Amino acid sequence: MRLWPDFDPGTEYDHWPRYAALAAALTELIGGILILVGLLTRFSAFGIANVMLVAMWLTGFGPAIQSGSTRLGFLPDYPWFGSDQWTLLLFQFSLFGCAMALVFAGPGTLSMDRLLLGGARKAAPPPPAQKPQGKK
Image 1 (cartoon, rainbow, N blue to C red):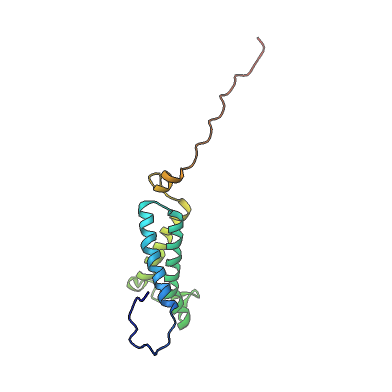
Image 2: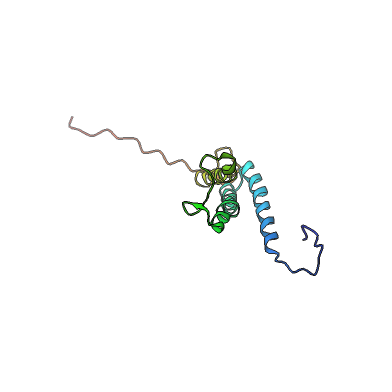
């Protein structure tokens, strides 16, 4: 499946970046639809959280570590209050946090997961307390 035409067929290149980008795009698209519907919510949220971790690594942490100008060993050396420079990394981090919240909290009561797979079962009510038998 060709995503982009190869203008120079004699050039050797690696196909893995193309497949990784396609996998990330499909994970975000299909995972987002499944989360919106409420089907396989935890599985989809875990996939999206992984995509966000990779995005943070490829656009923020990795280039900062490779350039050698970091704060705390892995954060880019941006000014602390330079909001325009931190926007991308913080947006990716907030999406990662939202996805992990869905992984741990799970779907809500109106989700398809709960409808199809059944929700948490209610515990059996405790037996009624008996009155103590005393002397008459």
